Length: 260
Image 1 (cartoon, rainbow, N blue to C red):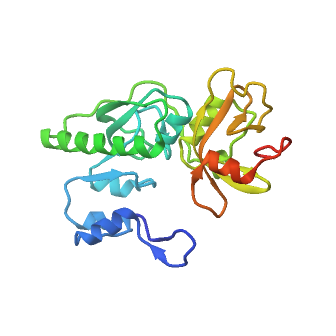
Image 2: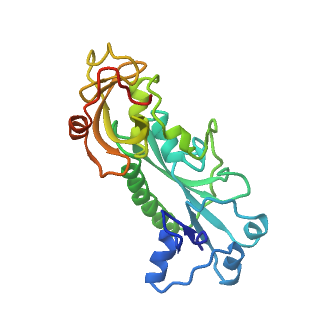
């Protein structure tokens, strides 16, 4: 089971999800109708990053477990990996839980904890979570499902990332801006055109401290607190390039700012 084919990118053709494409290569039947899982005679279903609530009548007839990429009940919802990075969490993990009607509220069979490296990107962290989750799933099912335990602690919710959140607000502290860059979709504007910031780091103490938010000194950009050092950027309509190469080509004037 996978979500329906969708139009992706600039083309008009429908494109299958990566899960559906991989299943097709393996000769496995795939459906985008949830009710079809009730007709295959399965004893147990596994849900991973499905992105939709499963209807009660399906839950009543088939036991389902779900791999969720957070340490529940922290970061229930659609974007747990991204929200953990944005919040500055030093640790996250993956939990295997029993699926129920609520949003990621089911009891838990087990969790695997992972440290988040200070500069780790969302794609790197997600890959590690996938590896840990696969091992957790196989080991748990091989041992046989025991009774799950209720989630304990304060629940927080990981809302889907809105595109507007990915715009760099230079009035924010540099440490917060670099977390946004680690989502690998952050952007700002320069001379009215979009400039993606693909890699950046908090500038060393004292460097760029006198810069106004968005002001440039070489590849250092002023922020509300501290400064951000650009490493890799992508101007609109061009390929990614080093920040130094972009700076040498664009030659920003002394009064020009990012985000203006």
